[in-house]
Image 1 (cartoon, helix red, strand yellow):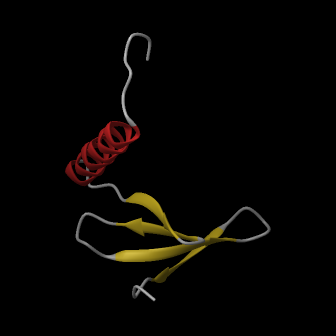
Image 2 (tube, one colour):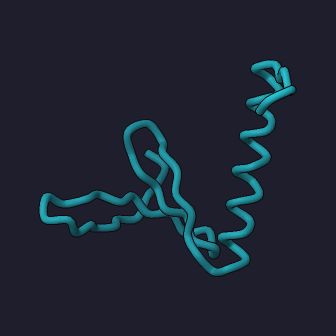
Length: 69
């Protein structure tokens, strides 16, 4: 962004705020949003349910309940 000299802390805060807005927009639309926890891809649904998503070699995927472990 030309003309802006944000500190690393300010960039982190901007990123967090953008993520919060995107998550709320997904919830409002009834869509899941995704994020990584370690090497796990997590989908979180508007009802709070979380699943771990694993992609198969054939391009399909499976979802399993995510317990936080």
